[in-house]
Image 1 (cartoon, rainbow, N blue to C red):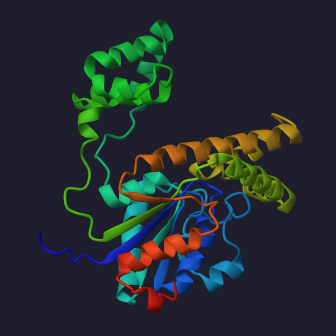
Image 2 (image 1 turned 180 degrees about the horizontal axis):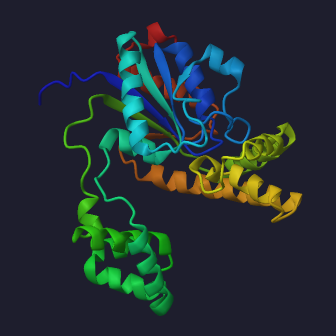
Length: 321
């Protein structure tokens, strides 16, 4: 097998509140790394408290690319991220450093490394037609229809998942091809970097859940509602924008709309964050080539640094491990 001469890169992935940023900063003290954020909320300016954005002192000491690069009124896609991240990775490499991409947005990691399939844009008229049909036969009936045209997609999509059923049927109607066939597309050439993936996967979720609850309560004390009030006062932001749909912001927005009280805001925010963490962990378990690390082990930094040192070709003496 020929030698792999691609430049090196690190992916540090994990659920929300697992300590990814702290570990990334600690690793950058030991190795010549340049940090890149992989977070769909941190790209937006003005989303600070609720997005758990690193504070100014941390960012001054450990600069991160791809933080505060969009106004919250501007959507930012996985395709946008892929372009921006590769440019950042090249800049870091040209500066003689190794890019370390750190975050929890699985779709961004996947789009970057594997590419995205080319699917048609949404068609409002067709969606309205599908919704009308669903009103007559129910989404279970629409799911059975999907199973006729695309059994593989129907096997992945639950009968009650109206949004994904509608999208799958929409793609079939627009292209004449099953959605599952088209999702096999993506990157045709090898990813330009050779990657070590580190995944923070808690063996016991109780400490993670406790951190999630504590962090959301801290966000409320630190002024999350004031932050969301300021976003609302702009007048150009609506709750259907990706920035406002982010966990924590959506619940705070609804609270300010009077949909529930302060206790419900706390409970809903914590529950939504736990659900996000659950989805992230499920995705990470599918990353078969990632090295799993328990974020609650006291030797986390030593284990992560050892894996990085081996990957980068450092000996233990030079890294001080």
